[in-house]
Length: 170
Image: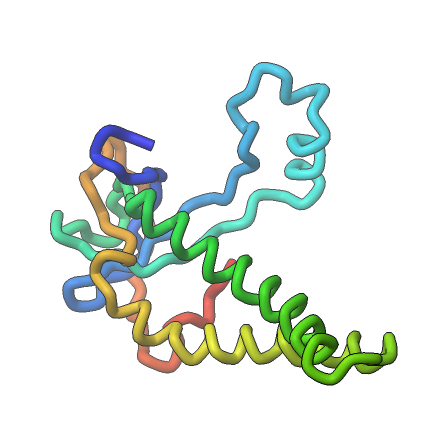
């Protein structure tokens, strides 16, 4: 993380959409730059699975165009808050629903507890999915193109249609 409070990643702009741009960044293992990569299981797994590309919609205050190499950032606190929601809430619901039912009704069978755990998990995912649209509009939670990189690559411009948005998840 930098002093500006952003977690940064280099990416390539692949499309423009109003005040936003779609950027692609190659997913890397966390130890991709580590000197011990040859003896590392995570690095080996990354080589087997290959490099996947993430496509993200980012605010574009710098006016980046398709083909531009840019630095994209997301606020560190937004990343932590989002991780807590995406991982913590489903886990809490999966464990909490059977526990609450046990406290309220007592004597639950293992099968009922498992069904309630899956119901809690599904309910949390549905609730989060319903909030995704509203959260995606919050500027504090948006990825932002912070600046241009010095190099540029050639990428064919792409027109993004409304029915394609979110369909490209790497």
